[in-house]
Length: 357
Image 1: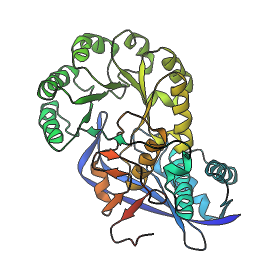
Image 2: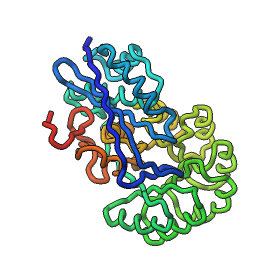
Image 3: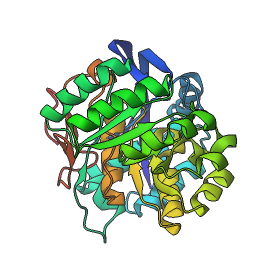
């Protein structure tokens, strides 16, 4: 058995511009960084970054739970399979907060990858050759009037998939989306309602929304109104509903769901996300990975998960304002708007000025 020693640090700051999240724009962000180190100095990094107003856990709860790792070394079998190592760790130190689980899983997998000289996606998908996954950009402008201009800029910069948060004023938003579609007929458009649209409003604008030829429409209505929404011919995707096993199974059985949107920060890490991907796949539904305005450690972990899934759907891992709170860095799996296989060990994350492994 190998002893790993834990250290917890906090990264926090005020954003230069708000990060759009449903009805809210958040200007502050905090990240708990977990570092696991063996006596020979090999390390693994994990990140817990619950999003206020969205995540089921708080930073206070996460820090309390992760802090238990600092009380005594964590013993794991360095020669064991990756999933066995994760199981050993959680048996020794159970965790209930999803973001804390994600941080510990990520740090362990990063450490294993650094120890064995293999990227995380190769540790978890040894028999499946990974393929590239495109990245979708999020439009950050709060006003629909600004959406077409921002979409123009993204497309000019090379974007092929764009996601927009809707539901504050669906009429104005549809009008802006129609402008974007006229200007960019081939652009893949995704919408996210964050459960803010009533079934009545969705029905009222259904014909216009259908004419937009959307790629996906995430969580448009509150849970109680899904039955009415499913009558409309729109390409629905599940996000928040995945936290409710009974609801997600019922919706997946409907045959109307086109994708499952996996956020490891709120689903309990790799293990929780992969279990939901398996559930969705059993109903013929593909999965994609996205962030909760996380830091670079979680972004690198999500990129590795996207490679494990091998999904053809674009991952929601574009650059966002919260990343500016961190030192300059590179993620080996991410090049421009593409996630691809690589040979860097662990997460393949390097901060500026950090020596190569």
